[in-house]
Every structure is written in C-alpha cells, then in structure tokens.
Amino acid sequence: MLRLRVKEVAQEKGMGMAKLSRLSDISYKTIQKIWRNPYHDASLSTLNRIARVLEVPGTELLEDVPEDQVPEEFRV
Image (cartoon, rainbow, N blue to C red; front, side):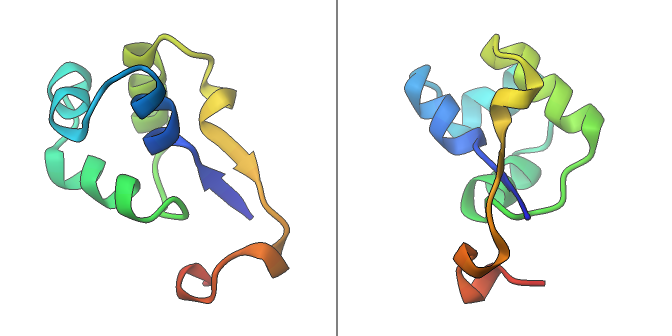
C-alpha cells in the first residue's frame, strides 16, 4: 500500500501545513487530510504540485508499505 511522506518531507524542509497550502495553491483542508492520514488518496497533480514546492522528486513523497504494516485505522 502506498504511504504519502508529505508531512515528513515538509517538516524536514521546515514547512508547515499553512505554508505548503499557500505555496502549492492546494486547499488547506486537503493538505490537512494528507498530513493527518498518510494513506489518504491524493491525485497525481496534487502530489506534483507538493513535490514542486518542496523541491523534491515526486517519488520522494511515496513509500510502499506492506499491507500487514499499515495501521488498522488506515486500512481500506
């Protein structure tokens, strides 16, 4: 299962949700959902915009996690 690393990468870059939302022109609510739930569905265009703002390749925002390691609360 794919896990989004947006929160970790943004924090490494010293960027919070509000600034990421503003610079990427993505609603704060969407950023908040991704931040709080790393297994949230996000479109490729959303991830591309986030990656561009964070100045990282889009692949850096993704992590493949084995299904049995996904916390129960995030399982589909």
